[in-house]
Picture 1 (cartoon, helix red, strand yellow):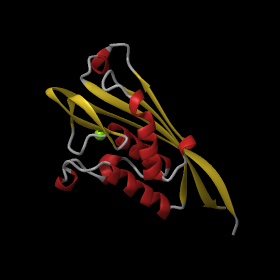
Picture 2 (cartoon, helix red, strand yellow):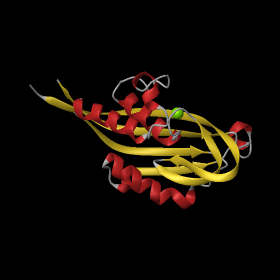
Picture 3 (spheres, helix red, strand yellow):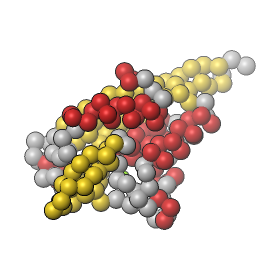
Picture 4 (cartoon, helix red, strand yellow):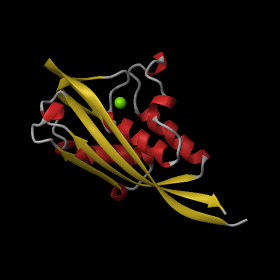
Length: 169
Ligand code: MG
């Protein structure tokens, strides 16, 4: 039996609400704790990037979405470290003989400022996914003060991944 190598794409998108605080705490983005005067409203640790990345991975291998695999109604995911969702998805990759090729991320928010944390975020993602740094890209943008993201009422992330599949012919 012969095999062919094909490439597939997965897309992920996530939003969480931000709540202003009177003090500084930490919010999680790409598995990195970032000091912030806002709290993220979420069942888990609220890491929008890891949620969007998990959805992109599941999308690429046709495995549904994060809500199906990790329902927010389940108590065990309360305050969960979102890297668990990522590692579970990568376990599915292994099962299906899928190989993650690259990750391209866009984080959309007014706050926090992403640039000072980009290198740390890439390092963390490289650790979690075992991808080399040059195949992980992080972009940050704002909505020019427009809409809920522009008013710092939320934070959003979009992620695209490419994945290699080996299929039997
Ligand atoms: Mg989410």
